[in-house]
Image 1 (cartoon, rainbow, N blue to C red):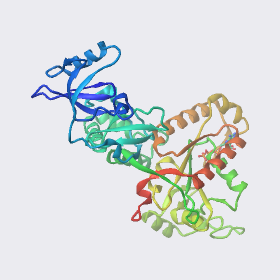
Image 2: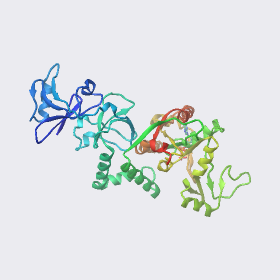
Image 3: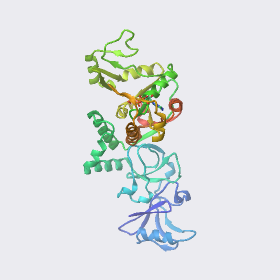
Image 4: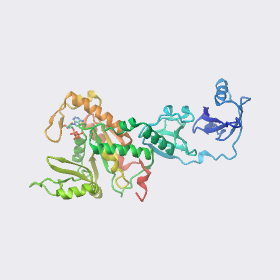
Length: 417
Ligand SMILES: Nc1ncnc2c1ncn2[C@@H]1O[C@H](COP(=O)(O)OP(=O)(O)OP(=O)(O)O)[C@@H](O)[C@H]1O
């Protein structure tokens, strides 16, 4: 059994009754003193022998002590300096709460985190429990988090033991298409196999292609409007990929400019070969955005801006595209009503009308759900309040994404990716 005391956890050897320092919490009191190390045998606390005591009794001695606390320890001769450990950075792809985890040796020393949090892992010497701090750093003291393998087995356990959880996990929030359902399932499965994603700071070398910029947001929040405005603002820098379509070419159009006009057979062939990021049907014709069209824009040295459904982000997360994902978030309900007075809801076939009260409620809810569900994939969140402001903020976020160091998965930098 283990308990925490002054930034260290202790454990009792059940055979001998001896009390040992189990781990020293990085940045805590004991760590800063430099005097206690994992494996040290605790002999006395303030002159009282502790051998044979329960860890709780040792804690009680500490609680009752006033002023200086005196430990008598026999140092662990084999301990290796923890300061020599390399810092590793991880993005959490799952949520974790130590207070709901019965297996944690010491819940008080645990650190809660949620999907998308950036963790600085300071100690991986234990195969089961690591020590980490959240970034940006608010405290110098680290907390216990389950190791990747530990978290994987916890996730697997939850998956198999709680069928209801699986159901919740895969329930799509904004549309119920089979594709969305399957992609949600794949997001869950991938979070189970990679609960932490190792990340590193990446600065795009000037000669390398720009990072793909992905905009996502709930229907009607203004993703398309922002994308269009951005491209209009600086068409020589920002560009959208040229989509493919099976509809007939019109007199004023040119293939490869407005669209790549292709036959239905070729389109279907491309679908089968996974060449589309997204595709769909409109008035009996097929339309789609291909990865080749994205690469065309990037190869020409431009910044490619696309807007996709959130379930299309995962397949785009590759070392070649190094996508930077910006979530376009709905503003507060009041601001939504004030700013969208002249806005129009336009959907595929027949609808082109002003926003109603129900639309505002739905939009706000959809935006909130989307953020909760996919936040681990977002690099930045932009509130689309005043349109001009949002457009300017978007420009500056994109500039930073391209020119300043950003956290990306380390796997994206590997040559074999
Ligand atoms: N910040 C804003 N202030 C006022 N009106 C806005 C703002 N952002 C977008 N709009 C307007 O809201 C309406 C919906 O925007 P838009 O078509 O870009 O939504 P969308 O998120 O792309 O939706 P969809 O996914 O259905 O295409 C448009 O009339 C657009 O001009």
